[in-house]
Amino acid sequence: MSITTIPAKTIKTCDRCKAVMDGRNDRQEGALLVKAHALDMHGHACADASRKFDLCDSCLYTVAKTIDAAMASHVPVQDAQS
Image (cartoon, rainbow, N blue to C red):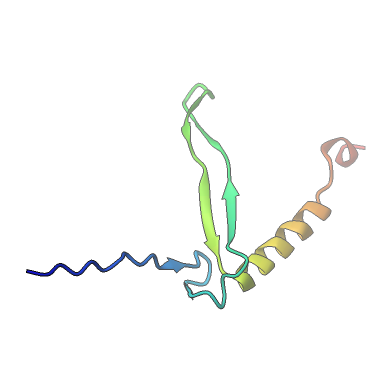
C-alpha cells in the first residue's frame, strides 16, 4: 500500500472585492485590524469585538487612502465648539 500526502492549500480572498489572492495581487499581504471591545448593558467591556479584513494590494491602497482622508478631515471636538 502506498500513501500520498497532499499538502493543504490556503486560499485567501480579499474581504472588499472578493478577488482570490494568488501572489500577484497580495504582495503586501495587506490587512486592516479594527480593535474594539463589545460592551454589556452597563457599558463594561465583556468580549472582544475586533475585526480583521484581508485586503488585496489595490484594495489596501484604496482603504488606506480613504482612512488618511478621513483622519485629515477630522475636526477636533474643542475646535468644533468654538
